[in-house]
Length: 458
Ligand code: SAH
Ligand code: SF4
Ligand code: F3S
Image (cartoon, rainbow, N blue to C red):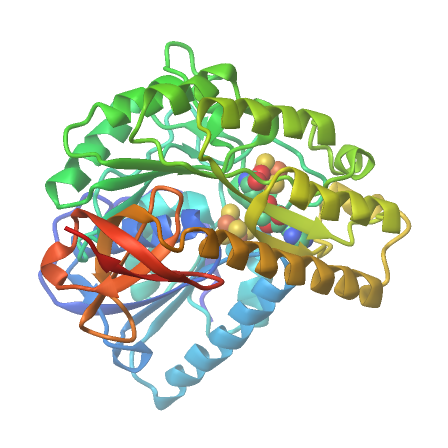
């Protein structure tokens, strides 16, 4: 077996395509950053003749873009990897690579554990995927978990050659400089770097030219965009600049940190109609004591102040959040504070998770773990309430006429199309796919937990 190749030079990144058609199968886990990175890998590999395989059986390259945010995510990727590795047994030439956050976190251990794994690289390997894959094809076992220089970070300009939908992600920063004590992302994605705003705007224009009209700006902490780069504009200015690109109808962003939500971003909700009325603002807990132990650097009161300012600027603001239950030391009172927070902040939805201890994170040092059964019971109670709230919110739209940006045919019925309101309610209504990309007026007839039904009005 060849030893892992640790060279960091990337000689073939700009070499011309060999012209041989090859097939790649991507399996993407985790957050929007990974979805975006997969698109960037697809774009770069297409220069070497790679097209999407129909399925893993038909691929000569399989890339798993992995997530390690919670233990469960890692288990899911391990079981998928097991299946893909079995495909190698029929002796056909197949390169298997693990990319993303688990790759960064485990590195060499992954290669040691799986003798038939060819390639392991972290998120900072994405800009060099062509040379990494080329070396693996030549028979080397390749490991690349080096973090790249932040000042010259090579954000990939190529746009995913696959079909574009109505909405697209655009990355504005990489990494994260926060140190929330539960979180592995700073380890897997490294320090924060802001992407130059002229590159961001170029990508927005390229996407609009391909029919995209809703841009979601992505990063782990978008509110801190530009602050550490001399001469760069702020996140609020960036929102204005994106809104000024002709053809951009809607702007969303994710994820923002409550501590860094500045007055200028709040103001943007007054100034920019294209900025949607849905905001995802992770709170994590409603207890200031727990927030302190999480090192989130805001209190319950501060979070509610930010929300009040946002609602003053945008009265129809729709708020969703992330919540962790069972963080070490969380008492019944702390959890009750979270349940109350759901009401006070008027969350209409949330991603909620049981705390999962992650390797190397500061929270591992905290004593008083919450028993699993207690954490599960809390999560059930929270999710039950969130479902009720989500349904109530959706039903509040019944009888109203809303503006929907049509995204495509519904998954269940070809005569039905679906799209979202600015507040992010998914609405299905009878209609033709020629409406895709248009803003249409729809009367909501029935609200459900995660969507609504409606009919077009003229
Ligand atoms: N940068 C984003 C979050 C990225 S991770 C932010 O700061 O909001 C997405 C979500 O996963 C987090 O908001 C948190 O709710 C959850 N999460 C992160 N680490 C976790 C862990 N160790 N256990 C359970 N949930 C976790
Ligand atoms: Fe993780 Fe906190 Fe950074 Fe979000 S802000 S990615 S939760 S460390
Ligand atoms: Fe997961 Fe990495 Fe995203 S750990 S949530 S894929 S940043």
